[in-house]
Amino acid sequence: MITGILFDKDGTLYDFQASWSRWAIDMLHELAGGDPVQAAELGLRIGFDIGAGRFQPDSVAVAGTLEETARALLPGLPELGFETLYRHLEETAANTQMAEVVPLAAFLAGLKARGLCLGVATNDAEVPARAHLTASGVEAMFDYIAGADSGYGTKPEPGMCLGFAEATGLPPCNVLMVGDSRHDLSAAKSAGMIGMGVLTGLASRGDLADLAHVVLPDISHIPTWLEDHGGTDTPAGRQNTTRSVAI
Image (cartoon, rainbow, N blue to C red; front, side):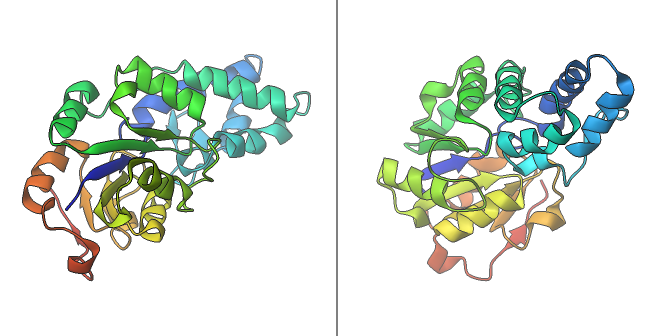
């Protein structure tokens, strides 16, 4: 029986392109001092096409950490130290307006009404992650929030997933881990959780299918899926049952 749901943040609770493209454009132009050529060059370092205003699927910012993004930018900004650059990215990221995939307050309230424990495991830093959830009015709905700097390691390692299980007292096999990237689903698999893929990040259905128990268009389909599978779906009953659902 599924008794807890652990969510990735970017690309899962929030639409990735809609949330982060504006941040990237503003951040790159600011770091480049308004020089459009340098801004475009910096964008290439993190897999962002500033002309198109879109991240590439292999962008370090998609599944990586804020630290990795800062280190990718640093060679193009030799006048800045890493710590200064990282803190700048963290501050601007925390103030970014996020695009909710669904109205999160009502959606999460519905899951809580089912008696589910809820958590967030993100490769974003914890400070901006909490800022985004607070801005959406949902931080208090989560029993657990972990970022890349919270002490559990980063995905695709299972530390954040196992941290949720320990914090809530739930067996990992009873937890649904929902994410938009292979990092998320690899972490879920290593932790012994049920992996659910969603398509509100940059990965395609084909990118996720081999690691996911199920792939849904977005989190709005979770309640219906739970009604069909939530009471009986366990690892013992889901071996070799990976499927992709189009709704």
